[in-house]
Image (cartoon, rainbow, N blue to C red; front, side):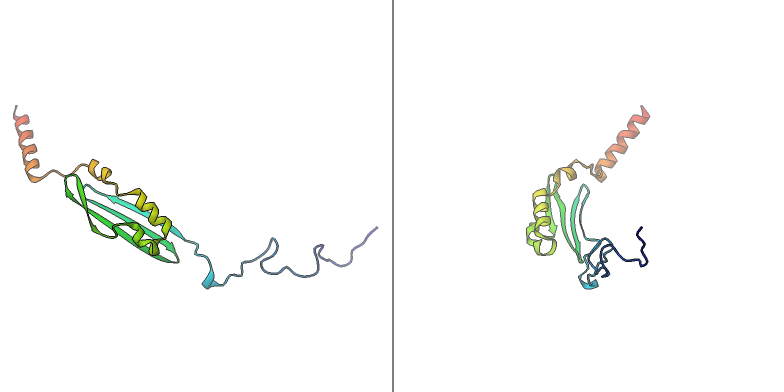
Length: 136
């Protein structure tokens, strides 16, 4: 019969050091701690007359770059603000994100499919036609 009189660890007599074993605790200094909310955000705000593409990269201090397009003619848009190519902003938002946005292009077809508000003349013509139909 075996009898144990002292409780000893089967692993050894040294307590576990930080960073080893199943109960390890992180010892990274707060200044070097990885950001828990690191993210890349891409936003496309598309209206019939304007397209705004926003790229936000948050890895430490957030960096935001915006590209704004305004309708020039019925079928074309003009760059009103922001970089011509996202590649020009690769130092701010990173090469991969800039490359992705350059390949994605500007969603002109989506802006063109959205209904545009009627002009004053068109609204007057629609109202006149509605009155004429109502009187028949």
